[in-house]
Amino acid sequence: MAINPSIITRDLDKVAEPTGNIYESIHIIGQRAKQISSTQKEELNSKLSEFASTVDNLEEVFENKEQIEISKFYERMPKPSTLAMEEFMEGKVYSRHPETDIEG
Image (cartoon, rainbow, N blue to C red; front, side):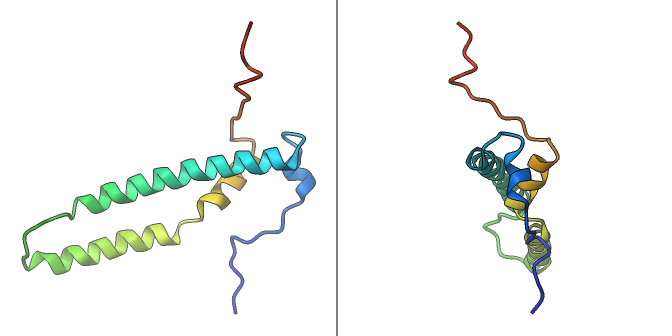
């Protein structure tokens, strides 16, 4: 059985370092993963919507192959949580506390 290359052991101290709190770091990573997932889903749906047709014809077989290839491409992409973790660890994720950022 092969080990999934997206499974990486993380040093929790390094994950907690940017925020000073492991739970806050994980929350930020989770929020970013949701953003990435939503964007990917929109992109995939947009690409697949090009194939939407109510007419049955001979081109449908060819279009199905294209749809399958597009779907396979998205399946092979790294998981949103993996991308979010990488971005967070590289300092590419911006986060703020709206309740403490209020000037007054």
